[in-house]
Picture 1 (cartoon, rainbow, N blue to C red):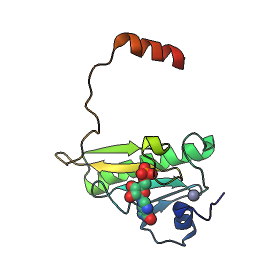
Picture 2 (cartoon, protein in one colour):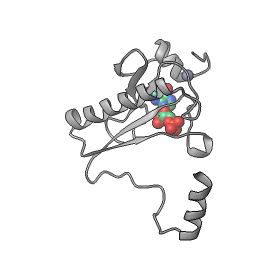
Picture 3 (cartoon, rainbow, N blue to C red):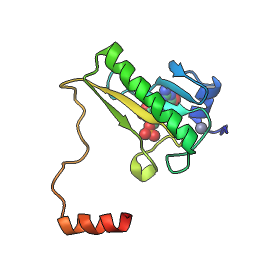
Length: 135
Ligand code: 5GP
Ligand code: ZN
């Protein structure tokens, strides 16, 4: 349920400080220490789970609902024009803290955040072949 070496478990327990914004039985939302934009939050399950591959359905559902609540709140209270909900899974997927979290990143028209890749049309046969492998 809790990993003593996990910094987010320590935040849940109150052993590490954080600006807590919302909590319920299963989830906690707190401010990211290195915000991408003003109001950047993290939403986590209170019970330790490494990532989206590992977490149980009940906690995942609770985290997603809490992220929706916080997305609405940054829109209403901070005047965000849009929101990114971002989850990173695995080191190759940019995850750096291995306790599942959704980033709630308020977006403001004209803010400096940019996509980390340049979208270009893919090869249609390759897309179709990958779809077949995923069915
Ligand atoms: P990841 O890179 O795993 O998707 O996201 C980890 C996030 O946790 C980063 O945005 C980072 O700024 C944030 N973070 C790391 N350590 C702490 C901490 O001790 N307190 C808080 N509030 N955020 C943290
Ligand atoms: Zn943890």
